[in-house]
Image 1 (tube, rainbow, N blue to C red):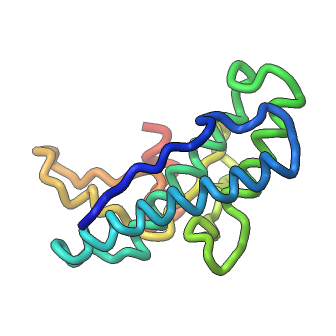
Image 2 (cartoon, one colour):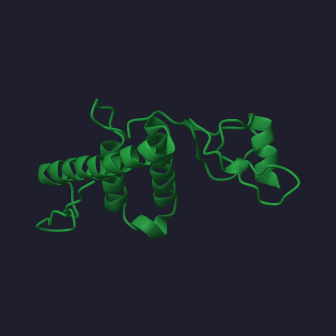
Length: 157
């Protein structure tokens, strides 16, 4: 597999909303996805891992990062910056045929859950299969294998 780095004129996007910024962000997203796709293909070839599942796990992590970013004002400080982050989020997860991040994820909702919101993964990451030496298997709180009551119990412990 060949890998090539392409230097950009600037590593930063403009700090305000412009059509140029939107275009640069879209191109950046495509470049990240193309490079990641090559890595996922190599991983799939050697391990048999499903590429669609890998994209779903990456998308889940990105969505969670946006939730954390927007939920804490110390990350955005001004309403203008928050609006820019929201626009970026929309672009990153925009529903387009060529956008591998355009995967629908569900938010966890439970009447007894008062903690921060978070997305559920569409596929299990299989971390519970790792032998941690514990008497029981450890599921992630975002695991799709858990029903809402099991998830709530895990979150509250």
